[in-house]
Length: 230
Image (cartoon, rainbow, N blue to C red; front, side, top):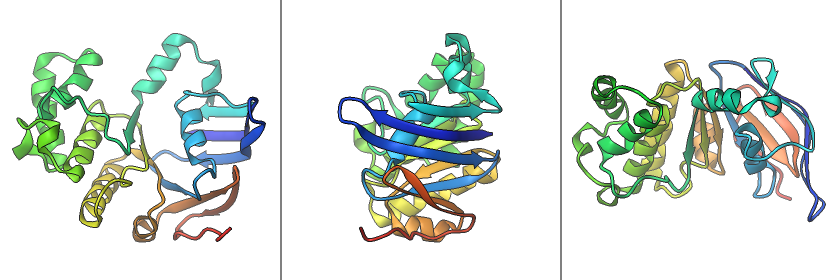
């Protein structure tokens, strides 16, 4: 589904090599966690995948096509297949829980009758049905992140990218979010998770890719959180 082929990224202003000869294949339906110290290259990898930045060398393939060769129209179609969840939620503060999720469907051009049908289903999936009329400031941190996940998956993306989604959460909320990500994966969505959370990765027992100084140093199909102490 996704392939990084000999991907390197050097930032010319600093000569820092953020990624070095990265080769990864992620199959459809996988759940993959990327771990590593701060500065290991996880955020750069996500930016490359979302084409918020481009590699200095190498290719990033989606279903065999290099995303860096996509036209504007092709890029829009590609991004419609990706849901993204961030550490800082990025919710619309002036909209209710229901409206935050519905807005993502409106932007995609979905008709009102489909929105009215799909939003309650997704809110039930993330256990927020009873909060549908609340505003983000009335939610806990865990509820905000569950809302962010609902918004990310409402248009049925093929791939969900969760970039440090539990970084601001307490342990109980963290595991609620992880359980939802696992549920989404079981429904067929490919999930890419970046995290510093040891317990999350150990509990998942899914594929773990470890980055150090921009290079892959470990790729374990049923891994745990192990990185060097350097």
